[in-house]
Amino acid sequence: MLDVLRHRAYRRLFAAQVVALVGTGLATVALGLLAYDLAGADAGSVLGTALAIKMVAYVVIAPVVGAVADRLPRRALMVTADVVRAGIAVSLPFVGEVWQVYVLVFLLQSASAVFTPTFQAVIPDVLPEERDYTRALSMSRLAYDLESLFSPVLAAALLSVTTYDGLFGGTVIGFLASATLVVSTVLPERAPVTTPRTGGAYARATAGTRLFLGVPELRALLALNLAVAAAGAMVTVNSVVYVRDVLGLSAGAVALALGAYGAGSMTVALVLPRVLDKVPDRTVMLPGALSLAVVFAGLGAVTGAQGGSWRLPGLLVLWAAFGAACSAVLTPAGRLVRRSVEPGARTAAFAAQFSLSHGCWLLTYPLAGWLGAAAGLNWAVLALGALTLGAALLAVRLWPARSMTDTHAAHVHADLPFGHPHLAGARRVPTGWRHSHGHLADGLHA
Image (cartoon, rainbow, N blue to C red):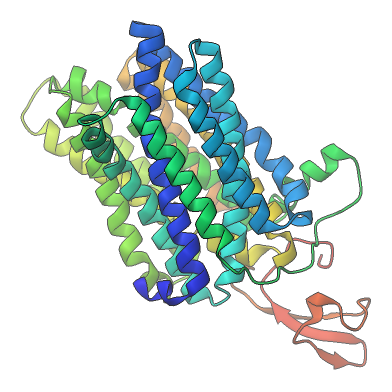
C-alpha cells in the first residue's frame, strides 16, 4: 500500500493532510481544557455546542465551496484555508468568553469545509490509476484513525512541559506546515468544469447535491453515510458512559475502548486495497453496513446485562467490529464518487458528499446523547440500531445489483462538437462519437 507514496505530488499532499490532522487533534484537546477554564462544570455543554457548530459549518459551507471552488485555483484555495485555520488557532488562547469560542470554532470549521472537499477532489487527478487511488483512500483512512489514537498521547506529552496554550501553538505549526507542503506541490491541470454556471446562488450551491442525488449508487451512499453516522455517534458519544457508568471502570479504560474502535478501522483499511482489486465496491460496502446492525444487537446484550466480567472484553470486541464495519463503508466511498461523475464535476460532488455525510452526523450526535441521557442506553441502542438497519436496507434497495458505475456501457454522442473534453478516446462513427464508460450523472447522459 505504501507504494502509492512514490508519487511525489501525492506524497506531499498526504504529508499535508497528516500534519493538519495532528494540529486539529491538538486543538481538540486544548479546546476541552479551554472550555473547562471558561465554564467549569458546564464544559461538557460548551463542547457539545461547539461540536454541533462544527457540523453546521460543514453542512452549510461545503455546498458553497462546491459552487465556487472549480472557478478558483485549487492550490491557492487550500493554502488560504490552512492560513485562515492557523490564524484562528493563534486567536483561541486569547478568548475570554464562551461565545467567542463558538465564533472561532465556526470560522475554523468553515475553513476546514473549504480545504477538505477541495483536497479530496484533487487526489483523483494526482492519481488517475484506480489501483493507486484505492490505496490512497486506505492511507487517508489510516491517517484519520492514527490521529484519533496518537494526538491525545502527543497532547499529554506536550502538557507535561507546557500549558494548553502550547497545544494551540502546535495547531498553528501543523496548519502552516500543511500550507507549505501544498504550496510546494505541482498539481495537474484540472478537467473543464461540467457543473452548471448558470442560475442563482442557491442553484449553484445545490448543484453538487442534485448531481450527487442523480445516481442510484450515490443515493445509496447517502443511506450508507447515515448507517455509519449512527454507529459512530454511539461510539463517540457514549463510550465514556459505558466505561464509567455501565462497567464502573476508570477513565483510562475509555481510551482502551476508543483504541479498540480505531484498531478495527485500521485493520480493515490495511486489507481493503487488495480486496477491492478483486471485488466491486458494492460487495464490500453493503455487507459492512448490514453488519453494523448485527453489532448493535450484540451491544444490546452488553447494555442489558446486569453484571459479569465478560462485559469489558465484549464491549472491546463490539467497538472493534464497529470500527471495522465503518471502515468497510467509508474507505471505498471516494472511489464511488470518482466513478460516478465527470472529472470536471468532482469538486462539487465531493463537497456534496462532505456536506450530506456530516448532515447525518448532525442528526445522530444529539440522538445518541440526548436519548441515552433521557431514556437510558437501552433505548439509545434500540433507536440507533433500528436507524442503522433501516439505512442499510435502503442502501441495498437503492444500489442496483449490476452497478452502472462498474458497467462500461458503449454509447454514441451525436451532438457534441469535435474536441469536446468528454470525447477524449472516442472514435468517429457515422452517427457521432462512440465510446464507453461507467454511468455519469451529468447533462451529457440520460
